[in-house]
Length: 199
Image (cartoon, rainbow, N blue to C red):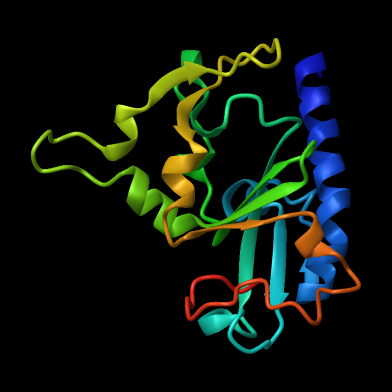
């Protein structure tokens, strides 16, 4: 196991520990399919049954959903890295193509900012083909190799500025303060009529 992979696992483990208390309050049951590689790769890092809270759970109340967690140590460039190749040299597709979770949890450890995204709507947004240019929306952004860590895989993806995604209705920012375990039963994190955000 190379050092880059170990570093990435440490960051993800830290994020998981930070988010588990919040997820456990918002869900009836939370399963972490660590040893079930197929489930984890295709349906996410967490399998959850959401609680039947009014409004903030929308149409997903009581449903079983998949949650995929992506974590970065710091928000250095103000971008989301949407992975298209986990190993470009071997033509292995990245999680934007292989993961079918319902929601993406994109977490920045340093600030504690969590971006909750409806994964299906994120893909629809990214892969929308403009009839004028005949190219996918995501291709207008920089396509770069992951260079934060030295690793064997040449991981490539699109760097999408946060400002471009956070204006979309399928992305919600949840700050560390809003996840305060003492307040979470009294704060409607998603105080809107949007049915797309169950947590």
